[in-house]
Image 1 (tube, rainbow, N blue to C red):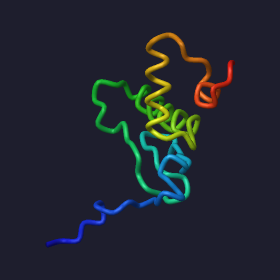
Image 2: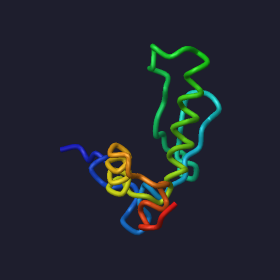
Image 3: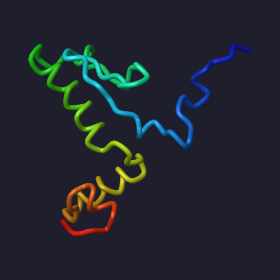
Length: 99
């Protein structure tokens, strides 16, 4: 049996993936800033224009960093509250504060 490293977490519970900053390469890719690990690419988004490809990749990095330190479970709560029209700002929604 082959030892596939993807079966093991790269980042542990004390240093979770959602606490890692992202960086945009200025083109079509988003990577983890400190570990230089690929997160996303828009290279295969064939329906986007050449102008939209880097715009989309930058947006992914911006949104990742905007919610740095917020777990996926917490983001799901934010998305659910947004879809019902009850969401204050994302930071306030998680802390229970009003915006």
